[in-house]
Image (tube, rainbow, N blue to C red; front, side, top):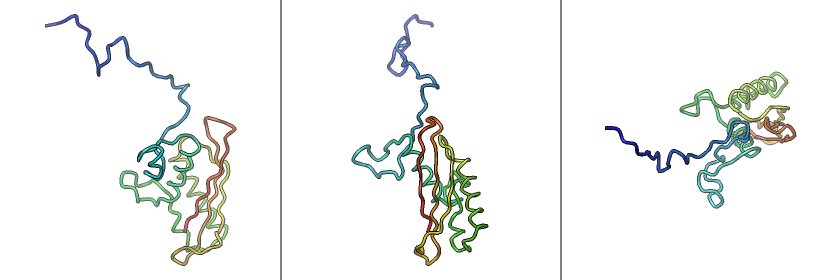
Length: 155
């Protein structure tokens, strides 16, 4: 039994579908603000972030997460805490740089790693061990002129 009526899909008539934005116009990447619920007054519990703030939050989360800590992504993160009780020499710093750059290129989308520095932090951590300051200079892929720094302290 066929009918000649137009069928509405999700409350819209077929002639009135919303037109999608072409991919070349959608250059900004959107994601959730980290940590969740930090700005409940301005955007709710699941606040959105874009651009520089999104990349900074993602890099901070990546560097402070140990591998195996996330259930559905067991390879996500950097094993930086294992370096805290190692001697702070050039060999250790090169291993830290390799760890950070490997994780960065696998999990951070929308930014280029321009410079990476590992600095022994003068203070001792809560467990009495060393502290490390990791400084990254990043550039957004969508905009060539946007360069920013991210600093993370591992203790």
